[in-house]
Image 1 (tube, one colour):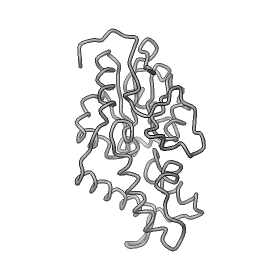
Image 2 (cartoon, one colour):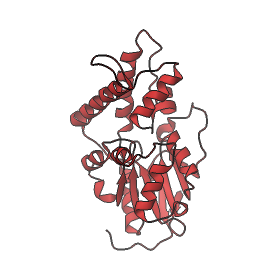
Image 3 (cartoon, helix red, strand yellow):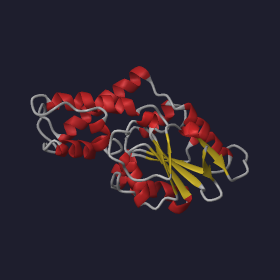
Length: 246
């Protein structure tokens, strides 16, 4: 079994959607609804697997819209009059759909992720959650796992501090700074191609690709990871005597 060795790693940064919480599918479904309405009569429908993982997954909402539209040779103004499509109107529509899904269905955390988080804390590791979403804290709270993280860096922080989104490593570096641990002694657990690239560019000591159900198996290879797992129950923790639970 692959392991996070705490003799060389002192902290871990977790992507949220698709790693800790089962919300990536809700994000993808909301994007498909929004893009398919806009694309009708303009281009082929949004592919919930290929288009989502190539162009949208892991990016801030506005960046994801711009990147996807560019892949189809399309563009939109950033803002426009009511009733006219724009980058911000598509983002708002997607946000409303995602929040409606959460209200209707709730949020679940992956059991393997919860067990890994608890074991890392039991052994004294520092832990942060990172997300491009502005709803990260609410999602973690709804999934009853917010207390397992020492720090959270999300879309609200990025907007307030002017931090660029992934694949730029700044969000991860900000999380490591808040944890008080240098990147080379920090693990990043990611499920998106931009996030994996960001972790590599940031010089993090251990990069773990969480590719659930081999969702990206038919896409071109992304940035290399030190470990690839299909779920966090495939990871163990070694290298440090457990301490009193925090």
